[in-house]
Image (cartoon, rainbow, N blue to C red; front, side):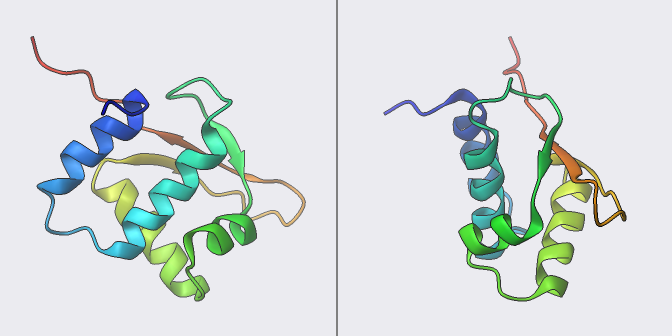
Length: 99
C-alpha cells in the first residue's frame, strides 16, 4: 500500500535509522498530521500542546529533545519562535529518490 509520499519516504528512511525511538516516530506523525493540508516541504505553524497531545509525549523536555534530534538527523526543519504569541514553524524535509 502506498501512503502519502512524504510519509512513505519517512517510513522507508526511519526503518533503517536505529537512532529513532518511538517518541521520534510519534512526533513526526503528529507533524505530518497537522501538515496535510499544506504544501509538502513548506513551512507551517505548529502548536506544541497539540503536537504533544497527538504524539502522546507528556514531557516538554522530551518534546524539545525529539524536535532537536529530528532536525539533527535531517527529517525536519524547525524554527522556534520563543515568543508566546507567535507560533513556531516546521517543515518536513522531502527526499527525492535517486535515479
